[in-house]
Structure formats: C-alpha cells, structure tokens
Length: 232
Image 1 (cartoon, rainbow, N blue to C red):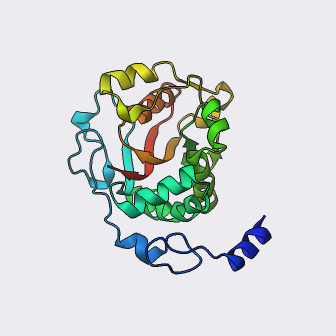
Image 2 (tube, rainbow, N blue to C red):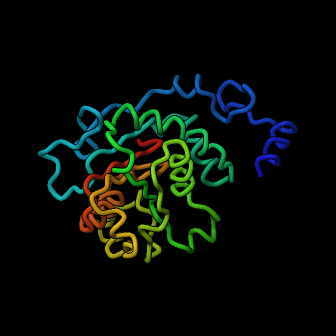
C-alpha cells in the first residue's frame, strides 16, 4: 500500500490547497496561517484556559474540555474537511492528525500515556455502508500512531440511525440522540479510570459529545477530552 501511494504521488503529487506546494494537501505553513480557535469553555463559549469547562458550567455536562484546532467558517478548512469526508481524500486526515497532536500537547499536561485512551465517535452501520469509512475512526487511528496512545475503535457503538443534528433545535437534538449509543461491555475494565480522548472532524453542538461522555462517565472513565479539527 505504501509503495502504491509513493508511485501515485510521483505520477500525480498532492498539492497544498492554499499555496499549491507539492507533497501535501495542506502544508504546515499554510495551516498555521489559518486562525486558531480561541481557548474557550465549550458550554458558555467564554474564554477558558486550555479549553477547560468552567466549574459553574458543569451542571449536566460530562466532558471536561473540548480542544479545537481551527474555525470551520474558513473556506480552506471547510473544504479540507468536506473533501476528506465526502470525496475519499482520506490522506487529508492523516496530515491534519499531526496538527491535532501538537494542539493536544499544548493544552493537556500528560504525565503518563497509559492514563489515556482514544475513542472514536461511532456512526451507524447504514451510514458506514454509504460512505465506506468513518472520519473519526481514521483520525483516531492516525493520532494513535503519532502519539502511541492506545485506541479502541468499538468501545461505543451507535444503535439508532439518527437524523442530522445540526439542523435541529437543542430540545430536538436531545430527543434525537436518546438511546442512540451503547457501550461495548467487554471494554469496561480497559476504560476504567482512564482519560478518554474523543476525536472528530467537526463539532457544531455539544449534544453528541455530551451523550457519549455521559455513557463513558457512567462506566468509570475519569476525564473526557474532545479533540476536534474545527468548529463554528
């Protein structure tokens, strides 16, 4: 596979979406030129050091911080994500994973890697048949390779094929997600007392992340960190 990719790059090299430099879909220089997402509490949206959730905001909130790389309203960032998600340019996710790792290190004080576990946002199998891959799963796999943090791809699974969340009111989002996810019981001992990193491409509301976090906290996960490429 690596040899095939090497020859494919020789024949038709990737080009940076911004500067057209070869060998990358997004080069480091151009990615850094895009505005970083402000350090905020992803409940009240006010400033918060290292993206921590404010103590007064923690009522009915189960995640502890949401680290976000860039703004989705950037034309460059949104195009990268859409092409990775819908047009099979999965290597974009590999490249962005390195930037996610740098952002994670800046905003999380790691004492022992063994204290962490990577968990993907599950998608319903019918959606998987339509798209053939889960962007969260691919991001998690790449992040695990870079960081050497353990990744389990089926800790959580989705049992209900829900409607798209972004077009709903908050009340309807909560109803839409009710009883949508379950935990794989064989992993309960593995995740116990761990710090879970849930990695995904975009977050527009916190309802899905909170629902997943609630299930994980019920099963003795100690801390939950959302790690996201972009948000509005």
